[in-house]
Image (cartoon, rainbow, N blue to C red; front, top):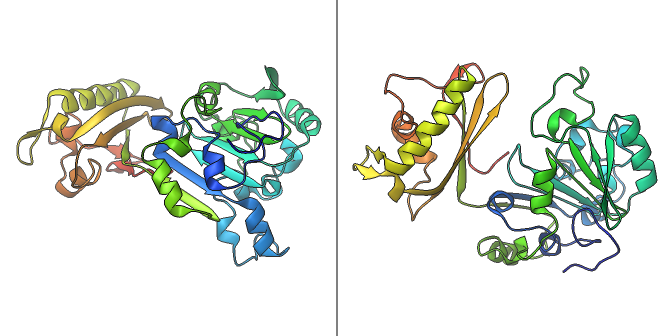
Length: 318
């Protein structure tokens, strides 16, 4: 484990290197699907005091720290901490189950005062870690943020914040943080796929690790429609056949899962892992226009995302 400097909301305190940071996080299908990391201390050192926005390294500053950089100086007065002062930052998983952790030295008293004033509720998690909760679910909330999209919960991304003197962990819901932190019996650094990739990268300023799990996000006209898409997908990969070669979808993908995310566009998330070689299950249907068969739809049906006909898919990117 990384050297411990006391209780930490994100595992062992004082995490710096990419591999040491991964030792703090539990390896699950969700956390290993997408990993984004930044060595903030090293970036600050090579930046030599230049302004973040004018620095030649400005494009590197938002890696690993989720919603913070894009709001500049607006969040620190509200949260009591500045993500730019972290020594390292990491985020794992895809929305709405993304978990982020900032490592460094933090004033827990100031942070608590600010978050309480911002509408968060306090819960003691023991071991020097305090949870501050705005909403303990993974639903976006557009009623609070103002026209600049700055408000408690930050639309869901900061629904739950775990604070300690050496780290700040945040995410959409407590269950996601509890699943990812601490590393428990299997850290990400020892994951069969992530571990070797981490060793290959060695000492790095920023890092991305994207595994083979793929995600399709589809918007439906109604909640019932979203549920039907989820059911159709599971039926297809369970007993349906790929028209290309008349092969069972079950011989091409495994670990199929669905989640109805809801929202005004009734989004449903579909995930699976490619079996063997060849193009991933996201890419192949795009190339062949086979989504109706994969989603168990009539061939004349159309899918809608963001008001446009089509399907949005995610290859491990947020």
